[in-house]
Amino acid sequence: MNKPQNVDEYIATFPADIQKLLQEIRSFIKDLLPAEATQVISYGIPTFKLNGNLIHFAGYINHIGLYPGAAAIVHFADELKNYKTSKGTIQFSITEPLPKPLIKKVVLFCLQQNLNKKK
Image 1: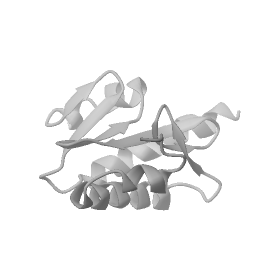
Image 2 (image 1 turned 90 degrees about the horizontal axis):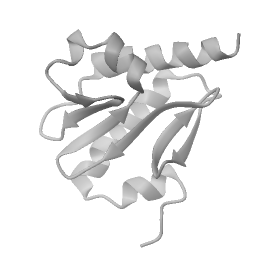
Image 3 (image 1 turned 45 degrees about the vertical axis):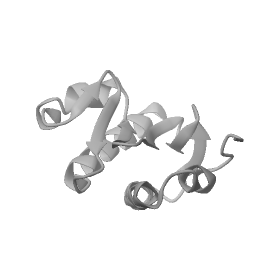
Image 4 (image 1 turned 180 degrees about the vertical axis):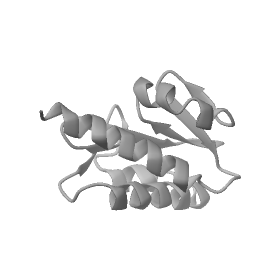
């Protein structure tokens, strides 16, 4: 199968239930970011860019992955205790609603980090 060239193609490769979650997290993140943030495929997964890679997300059989980078994982360690994490990754189960208040905090943290790169 060809590699997806854009986020829509990426999402279309998943079963309907995962597509729904991916569209949900995509539009939620998009609404939090300035209009100039762009969506691309980077490292083979959907990525929002603004002053460089801002945040990535991806679909899997049992979870949705959010990739905010190591600084966000450390910063929100207490709030992430109920989720599987690694150095720069958070996993959200596909059987639970997306934790939008937490995702919002993480996205805004990443946004602030990237906006600070300008200075």
